[in-house]
Length: 147
Image 1 (spheres, rainbow, N blue to C red):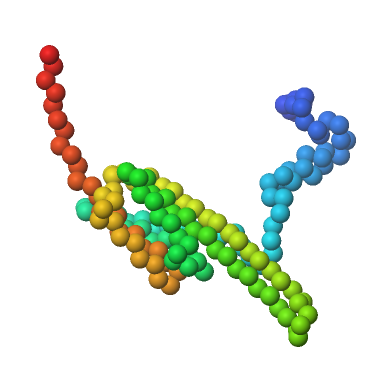
Image 2: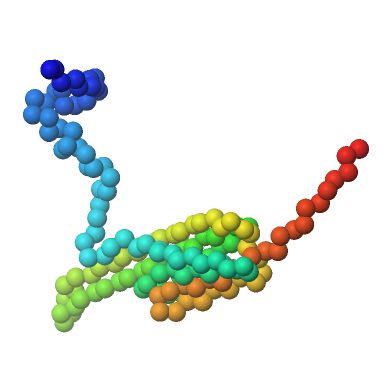
């Protein structure tokens, strides 16, 4: 029996008899620069819900509380943080190495019910941001008279 293969006229493999060109370029443009020793900052979130509120625990280690911004708009919550690190090694008056790192991470999510922004609270300790987001009271539906 004959094997049936799909022909792709735009494939680079037809130009290369060994078929390695596609593998060579795969993932080449994904990350042009990666810094060793300093991983990309990420905000990991745990979300819990009860009848009256949402509780969010966000892991943001190594960040000062002044560098954290929390924004609440209806049922949309946004958390962003910025970290800055400077490190300099000297031997006498001669600088051997100087490094700087600035990173920014953000996380946004939408909740099922709107949040009462006036009663919302935020606490940050030991690298964990805790948000207490009370649910807004559901407004009663209003019936309109048809004229």
